[in-house]
Image: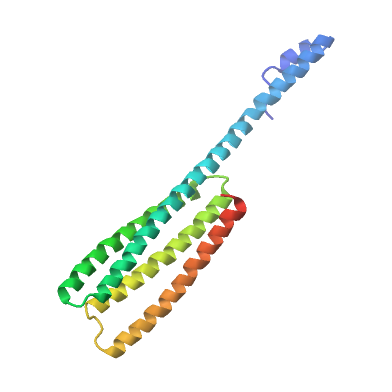
Length: 199
């Protein structure tokens, strides 16, 4: 147990009324000295909570940016499918590939913001939220990759026959459906946690 550094003065003033008051004051001083580390720790915890909130806000802002860019990507893919000649299709695909890279970069930036929360202390709710958001992003990223790969094969006539195309399409649809469900479930849980815990 930590010894009070002013304990000797407490005994010297114990014999008088004034001494009793002084002793109480000195004891309080000792208690305050012993509480300083605890107060500092609480302050650190508060700082971590504040920092976690900033990371969540930054991640959520990136999510909004990613949503807008994803809309651009979907439109670009649609343009590729609607192109009627080889030159127009090639140009549209090049544009779609560029936007796809931008979306991927945003996904990684967003994941990095949420991942920072894992290194903080005393922020269990924020850490759980970050975990769910990363799960959501992983499913989203895989879903985009599956779509991009399928369209790339389609664009490059990578399927040898109609039968191969139909088989690949069925596989793609099943994989996309599974990933979409994972994405939506993680997103739903994250939103509910954020609402319940006021994150």
